[in-house]
Image 1 (tube, one colour):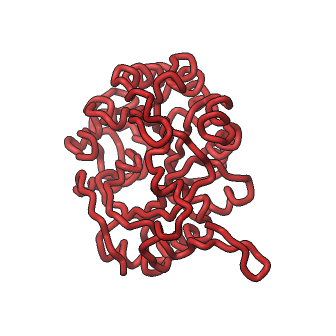
Image 2 (tube, helix red, strand yellow):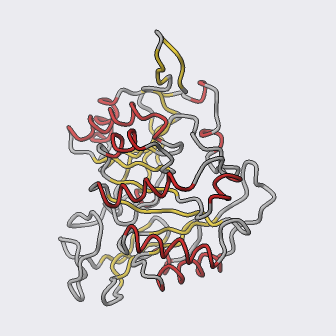
Image 3 (cartoon, helix red, strand yellow):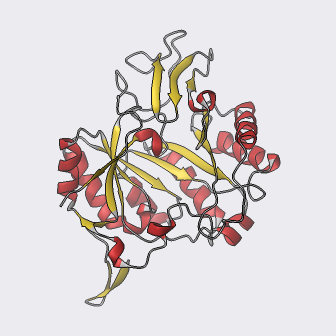
Length: 318
């Protein structure tokens, strides 16, 4: 996605996309950032990791510019989000750190018209561009793929420590709303010991208010011989996380209303009921507090939830 022009390295994918779509914000997944609202999502092509289990491999592993079939300037993207009633724009499908310049310019254009921006990323980025990139983001979901260097090296062709550094930086040095996702793969990163160690690190280093999502793996790309994640594994991981002090832990890619809903950390009252991407009961006050005990629910909330539901709406900007 980059090449040499005029003696310098340039971003070949600037202004181009593999497609635009309106998604529910919960699909990113973000459960504590403008719940129920539509988000205009797009990505480019390519990636800086090589995960054997990639579930967007046709986009993230593409080396063909033919993948980039649509185009839009940053200003046009921001205008489209406003026109379509989206509260935010998400850089997703492939990792936005590889289209750094384009993502930042879109974020700047969005802020000018009151649209927030979301980065769905693996957090594998060097210190200087990391600071520049997240300066312009409002929310992010970071994919913490595992909690061992062996997994990152053998399965993702990367390293664990830069991702931990990114998570620490976001939590401690920025105002970006942070949530974390871990895709649990049978036999590779789903042991009770690893989940215990990871969730303890999250609480101690990032704080107990960072929501954590455990999602189910399905066979794809170069790991079609690995079985799907049993629902029992997700239940186990969520139980460990809650016992270790994570206040909001979710299960994903499965039908689990309990694991998908938000509860008050103080009194355990149901705050936001979810059936996958569809919101049900809503028991937050206008300023994001539990209606039962008044405890503040961490996140970015508006006075009322959105009603986008589970719809996925492709959009053409041509």
